[in-house]
Length: 431
Figure 1 (cartoon, rainbow, N blue to C red):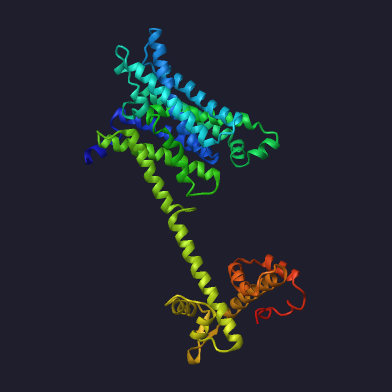
Figure 2 (figure 1 turned 30 degrees about the vertical axis):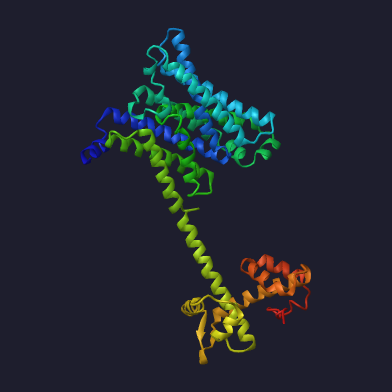
């Protein structure tokens, strides 16, 4: 295996270079156009188009056979796939426009009907003399490992066309994806742009038949942009990351199939994309699970600290801030109060006093006064302007006091009368 790995990394084999170039070009193009497809909420359209190409491939073979031409001719088969895929796309759009059927139902109808028709035609092909050798199964499952130089150049050229059109229409596609209504009101040709986008999806789908097959082409249209979504909220960055993940998935799949000769390249490419998606979901810098857990943990600690400071301030208004008084102010889970007191002392917000009581430091007092002030201002607003029952006002105020910014606090002060906001910290309205 080490020898095979070194042989692949050195790119000694001509076939390896051809397959790697073609697969990576397709993966990059699929990731790029899939970004817009995902944001348009049409991820399953790629799956529908992939299945819709099967009757075109079989029909093209039958027509070529009837005319005495070479039925296995790649231009014939790809032309049939493109026509059939376009027909599937138009069928979906027509169903959506002229009926009340929802998108998911329209996609399911077109997918199942076209694929069933394709299976019927493939059966007819297999009954012809020499039909079993037609090689149409390659378009279903892909034939990455047997890609020729002409196939690779074709995929590369089509990928460049897709990239150029996406770059040239990037602003228009962005507007179409995020606010189609605004684009139409602004005079943009929404239907034309949508048609161009769908045509590019058809083009990539037809190109992908050579690499991963019609059953798996949707994976590279959806998985790379979905993985890129975990890394950035900016469309430009997302498109670049999706392109890179698509390219890397294809390259890794080709490498695995080259090292382990019996592994199907198309399926391994999809598995590599799924692996990168899993990594992105866990480690993503924008929406990753680890980052989200860290933010949630930080937010929980901040809320506990703020609850403790407010409880200490309110206790000091009427007496010493002992552990028993703090537990009376707020229910704490076993051990949480002691841990939070220790953290606040280490952070310089609290200091231990005599008799087990706690005192606020200078920094802690400023923060505690701000928290108590925000809480009581919101309580006053709920009591006098929102008709909230006094028994519920403390709990309702506790839910929002942590997110009151200075602008909202100024707005509350403007609503409340001068007497209530004369002091920096209002009196407790529940007393």
